[in-house]
Image (cartoon, rainbow, N blue to C red; front, side, top):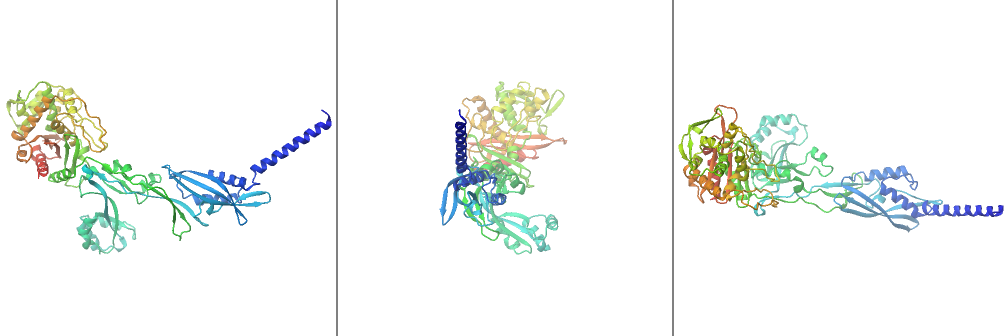
Amino acid sequence: MSQKSQMWSALAIVVVLLIAAGVFAYLKLPIQARSAAEAAVADLRAGSLDSAVWNEAETAQKLHDSVLKGLDPQLLSTRSVELDGIENRGGSTAARIRWVWTDRNKQSWEYESELPLSRNGLLWSASLTATALHPALKAGGVLESRTSPGKRGSILGEGDEALVSEGTVIDVGVRPSQVEEKTVTTLAKDLDIDAKELRARIDGAEPEQFLPVITLRESDYDAVRDAIHSLPGTIFKTRTQPLSRKKGFAAATLGTAGPASADDIKASGGELTPEAVVGRSGMQKTFDEQLRGPANEEIVAVNGKDAEPVVVHEFPKHNGKDLTTTISVDVQEAADRAAATAKKPAALVAIRPSDGHIVAVANHDPAGAAWDRALTGQYAPGSVFKIASGLAMLESGIEPNTMLECPKTTRVNGKSFKNAEDHVLGEVAFEENFAESCNTAFVEAGEKVSSADVSNAAMNLGMGQFDLRVDAKMADVPIDDDPVVHAAEMIGQGKVVASPLSVAVMAASVANGDTVSPLLVLPDERTDLDEQVIDPDHIKDLQVMMRRVVTDGTAGELKSVPGEPVHGKTGTAEYGSDSPPRTHSWFAGYQGDMAVAVLVEDGGFGAEAAVPVAKEFFEELNR
């Protein structure tokens, strides 16, 4: 190639490069308003304003951060920023921007704003303003995301009757600086609280703070209002919170709920606010997420501390979902009243054998302790467990009319076992030993049934583990072939422990004619058993023997109960190391389609403490 040709080729390359550079600059550098807008939008999308398109980029970044820092990133998970076009009006130019924020529930918040653009020589630049971040903002304004609790779901019972729902309460408190001595003495007297403890709390509090004293249902507050309302230093705040239909109604099982604490709020990741109510115990705690539901969210524009915040967006409202249980209002009220007749801590569980529904769970303690012993307590079942060991004996070939010795005492590997009050029956039929709850006859029958047989019988009577979806325990009947341990197992002692719930299921299974699977929370997700587990003849024998306990045995007090015949079994369960040992009092039985277990802690003999509670329960149902 000639030198001249080479020169023209080089010149052509330079021209092409210059044209390409010009096209690149025209398209990519902010020579056009659109190029500047696209670069600015990309920065806003990323949240990092670090391109050269901004007038005073550092100032723009600070404004961006201060305006948007109130939007909780845990509530608003993503943002999208897109360019919708360029506006030219009255000699000014602005980029139309579409913002789309998405919350954690995949719900969107959309709006448009305008970003001012200006030209300086050949290049365009962008100037960030508060209005560009949201049109409702003024200079100095900010955006904030706020949460508020939705309506808490109710706990429902049979027939969708409300067991727990929102109700009005009054927080009674004091301002320490204004309290006089008569305030303390009157509050202590009318609210049944300790005056010395209240005075100590007042003395240790900040003078002007609201010091809570007690929270009362509206009806309870009305009863003492005239006595306490005008006392010096008293303060009263009205609010709502979940309340059971009646004070004490299935209290330990349904549980409590109250305002979220500072720790609750901190741990919630933005879901809870000081106005939120959270479950503290029982079903309220177990199903708190369902009952509370997700927090309601809104976005507000705050244009100065003296300006009223403006709601610029509300996400769809959320309320908690109701929880449906199998509890029957009428049966629960009867159970609560019956349990309250016990002079010591007591528990009562009622189950409908035909469908396994737990229709009442009552806990009573004269001292006021409110733990759910009915569902979670673990106790030696004593002689009520003879229903299970009795089934094992029937399955081994022993019949109700089989003659068995009932001596005053009997020994197994050197360990002595005796009857309550040194009772002696002599040689009598198995059914009479059952009715009179002869320990020695059952201990000696342990030679004819294994520990595995007894454990299997208990499981077939429903005492094994079931998923009730709440905090609940059933029975533990370990297999142990040690002769002494097995002998104790035959009379519900030794290593055997059971909850009142498991004992109620055992009684329900006898009434039903086969294994009952208990149910407390709906919907019913269980799989029904397809085959008969327990021999029907053995069930009939147990039913006859449990009836004889009432007609001719230790539960004779129940003969006079109106309605269908009552079947049952009493129990006296030794515990502790005292001599003589202390005893829990038990009853397990049924009437028609209602099975029940009653426990009275440290109540003595079953016939003395548990049977009267069962009688009260059945009589309440038959009124």
